[in-house]
Length: 396
Image (cartoon, rainbow, N blue to C red; front, side, top):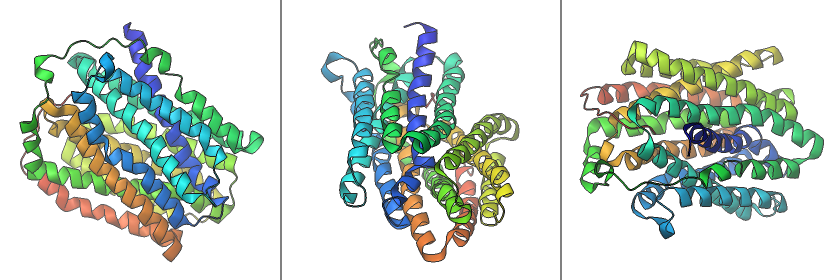
C-alpha cells in the first residue's frame, strides 16, 4: 500500500466514525423524541451505546494476541467492525424505539460494538506500522478525518431528514461506513517486531497514583463535556423550536469549534506545558457550559455553540496528550484503550446523569451543575503532576 493510500485509509476510517458520531451528537435525541421517549430513556440509550467503548481494552487485547484466520492481527477486525456498523444502520429504520425500546437499545449496543472494534484495531495498526517521524502526520489525518465526518455529515443529515426522511439518512450512513473497505482490504500486515511484544508486567503502570488520577480525570472531563453536548440540540429545540435541519447546522458549527479547539490545543499545550493547559482547559469548559445556561436569545446560539466546541476540542486534545505521555510502549494500545475505556465510563455516566437531571431540574440548572463539576479536576491535576514518570508513547 502506498503512503498516500495509507493516509487516506486512516482518514476514511475516522471519517466513517465521525459520520456516526455526527448522528449521535446532532440527531439521535431528536429522533427518539419523535417516539415520545423521555430524556432519561434517551440518556440510557446513549449510555448503553457507550458500553462497547468501555470494553475496548478486551477488544484491543484480542487483536494484540489473536491472528484471526491468518488474515492478521488488525485487518480482519477492522473489516468485521465496518460490516457490523453498516448492517446495524440498515436495520435501524425497521425498529420502533417507542414500542421496541429494548430492541433499539440492543441495536445501539451492537452498532457501537462494531465501531469500537474497528476503532481499536485502527489505532493498533497505526501503532504497529507508524515510525516516530510520521506519527504527527498520521494523527492529523485520523483526528482530521473524524472531525470532518462530524462537521460535514451533521449538516447533510439534517437536510436528508427534512427532505427525504429518517430512513434515507440511516441508509446513507450505512453506505458511508463501507467507503474505507477497499483500502482496508489492501492491508498486508508484517510480522511483529520484538519491541512490540505484549507484556503483562507492563500493566503495573496502573498502580501509579499519577496514572490512576489521570484515568479519573478522563472520566470526569468526559462526563462533563459529553453530558452537556447531549443536551444542546434538545435544549435549543425546547427553547427556540429549531428544525432538524437547523439542529444539523448547529452541530456543524459545534464541529468547526471542535476542529479549531483541537488544532489550538495541540499548539498551545506545546507552548504552555501540560499542567497549565489542563487548568485552562478546565476553566474554558466551565465557562462555555455555564454560558449555555443563559442562552436567552436566538442570536446567542451560534457564538456560544462554537465556544462550547472550542472547549470540547481543546479539553479532549489536552487529555489525549496527557494519556500518551503516561503510556508504556510495551502495552501502548492496551494501556491507551484502558484510559479511553475509563473516560468512556464517564461519558456513559454523563449521558444518563444529564438526561435525568433535565427531567428533574430543567436544562438551565443542569448546565450549571455540569459546569461546576469541572472544579473537581483541580485536586486531580496535583496528583497527576506531583511526580512526572511519563514515558514516550506511540500514536493512539
